[in-house]
Length: 150
Image (cartoon, rainbow, N blue to C red):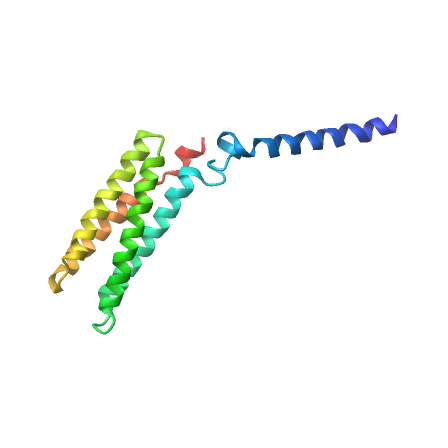
């Protein structure tokens, strides 16, 4: 009779492990495109962090001396291009129309920022700063995690 009390918990534990392992590729909780393991929200968070890094790079380049300014701005242009590709992929992966619109808004503000960076001159610092602020605001609207978790 004691073997039965040992066998029941073992069977339950094995069943739970099998369900978790079998469910890894499926559903909104266990799959590789899940909220928990990545999916759209993970991409949005990555894009948000990449956008914040871009913002800091732009602010550093704006304050930097003339010695390495060209190299910094060339690096910023590469970051803008990388973020543009990431946002396009994120927009294509968005299932919800509201998510798609948020990414489209971020892409539009990134395009305006890119235009300001491409045409930068001594008087463009305020324009670039203003467009960075608009871009950052669009990134913040991009990822309301509470809506994606339930």
